Length: 177
Image 1 (tube, rainbow, N blue to C red):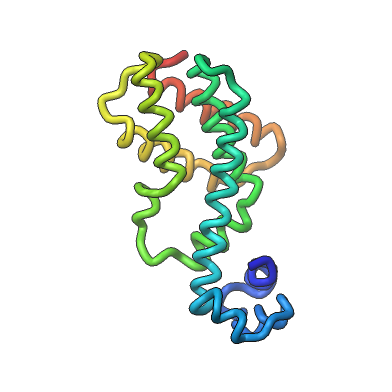
Image 2 (spheres, helix red, strand yellow; image 1 turned 90 degrees about the vertical axis):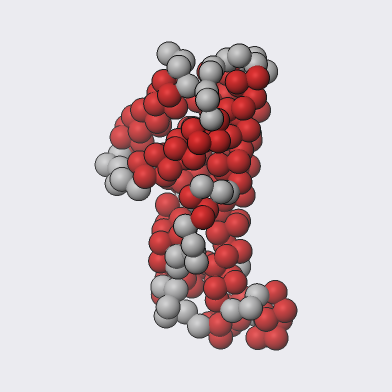
């Protein structure tokens, strides 16, 4: 997968062949096909690895916040998710734009939306905020964040401003200051 990622980034998805990948990974074609049905299978695995990496980052950020600090948890979630996308924008571009998924279902049903929906539901249960539909809110927030992180950033201050703005919007949407 690492060899495929490098090659896709260097040459582009369409210009990279399975032979390029196996040569770059120093494996036989048969070994490649034991793990992947083709290039699209590698991209699907790279998508999964990207999203899992963002989720791990979110979990670590939220874990650093106190058990009853719902403001902190939601802020940490949004900052970690946004930071995960920004830090690997090139990979996101590759696996979600250059080699588009077969459907758009992932914008409403993926492990990041599920994790955010769970956090929002736990916040409702703890009476930290009131939401009629935590899952709908999670989909809305995830897609809003997803759209915002596509904007080019001029510098580190712009990044900090974006993280602050996104966290602020997440908090206001659930009724927190």
